[in-house]
Image 1 (cartoon, rainbow over the protein chains, first blue to last red):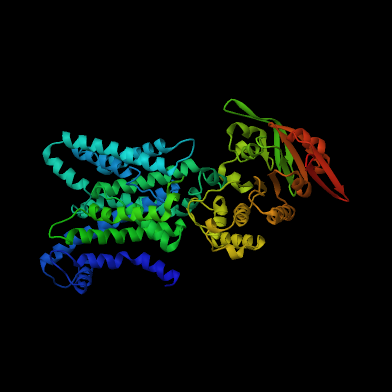
Image 2 (image 1 turned 60 degrees about the horizontal axis):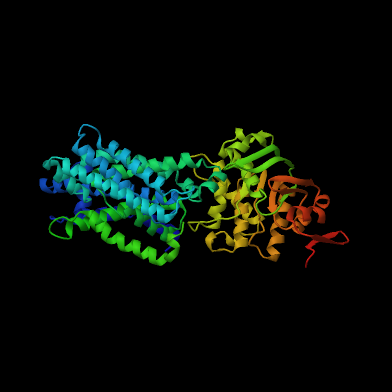
Length: 333
Length: 255
C-alpha cells in the first residue's frame, strides 16, 4: 500500500468502526438502515419505528461518540507522555495519571457533588503526574526503570486513597463508584459527552498544534534547550494538556488502561516516529480501537464486560511482546 | 563573534574556570586545547547559557548572553554535542529539520522554506543518500555529519563543537575538520571547538587557546602556541617536534 493510502486509512478508520459498532447489540440494525436512519434523523423526513430511533439516538450513538472521545484522549496523551519523558513504554495509566484522576472523581462523587468532577479529576491527576516525575528524577535524568517504579508507587498510593473513599462513602454512591472504576462506557449518554467532550477536544487540539515540538522535547533537556526550546515551560504545557484529556476521559469512563501505550506504538510501527504523524494518527486509531473494544465489551457475552478488561487483555500481552522484542534495551534510560 | 571577559565559574564549591578572557572571530576556527578535566567542555557549556552565573561575562555577536532567551540564543549559536543518546529512530531529514524549530512559531509547523533549507544542507554535507534513513542506524561519522547539519539548519553565526573527531576513523577525522573549516570561511561562522590532538590543532586552527586547570595557559597563533615547551607544561609530558618544510609534528619523547 502506498504511504498516503495508509495515512488515509488511519485517518478515516473511525468511520467504518462506528458503523460496525452501531449495528451490533441486543437489537441488530443492518448497515444500510443505519445510514438511512442517521440521514433522516439529521435532515428530517422519513418514518421509522420509535424504538429504533431510541436505540440508535439515545443508546448507541452517544456511546460510540464517547468511546471515540475517550480513545482519542487516552492515545493522544499516551503519545505525548512518551515523547516528553523520552520513553516509549509509558502512558497515563503506568505513570499514575489515571489513578490520580480516579481519586479526584471518587472524591467529587463522594464528598463534593457540587463541584465540577472534571476539574477535581484534572487537579489530582496533575498531582499524580508531578509526584511520579519528582520521584523518578535523579540528578536531572529520568531513567525508565525509576519512572515505571515511581508510576507503580504513585498508582498504588492513589488507589489506596480511592479505597479509603469507598469505605467512607454511603452505600448508594459506592455501587456507582465501583462500577465506574472498572472502566466502562456503559454510562454513556449525551450529558457525558457534553461534560467531557470540550475538555478532550481542547486537550487534543493543544497536543495536535504543538506536535512538532514533541520531536524536539524527545531529544532530552539539554539538546532541546540548545535547539531553542524553553524545556520546562513547554513540557509543563504538554503535561497539562495530557492530564486534561486523561482526567476528562476518566471522569466519564473510569480507568481504561493500556490504550495510551498500545495505540501510539502501533502507529509508530506503521508511519515512523515523527510526532507530526504519530499524534494525529494516534488520535484516530485510538478512537477506532476504543469503539471496537467497546463493541466487543457490550456484545461478547449476554451481559456487559467493562471495556477496561478488554483493553487490558489485549494491552498487557502487547507490553510483554514489546519488552521481549526490544530486549534489555528497554530498561536502559 | 564570541567575547568572554574575566569569566569564572564555581560548581559545587569548586572553582572550575578562572580568569577566562578570549575572543573568537567570525570566519575563523578557534581551538580549545587542554588535558582532560581542564574545563574545555564546561567553557562550551557556559557559552550555551548552561550556567546562569557565567552569563554576565559572555557576549555573542555583541549581545550579552543574559539578554537572550533560549529561542533567540538558538538562532545565534548552535552546538554539536559530544554524546548523543537518541530514543526514537527519527529519519535523518527530520533530525535536521528540528534545527529550524527556533525559527518557527510555537503553534506552527515547518514551511516549504524550512524544507528547502534542509535539502540545501543535505547537499552541502553530501548526505542526500542518508536523508530517509533512521539516524539510530547510521555510523558514528555519519551521525556527526547529521548533527552538524542540524546545527547549520539553525542558521547560526556561532558554531560550537565538543570533540568533533571523537569516535571517528583516521580519514573521517580529517574530512570533518576540513568541512568545518570550509563552512567557517564560506559562511563567515565563528567556530569554537575542542580537540585532544595538538597536531590536529596545528593543521586546522586559526587561533588556539590552551586551557590548563581551568585557566588559560596561553593563547594566540597556533604556531606560536603549540610548542613542545607549552605542551610539556600543560600535559606533563616530554614532547618533541619534527619540522619538515612547512609541516610540524609533535610526538612524545619516550617513544
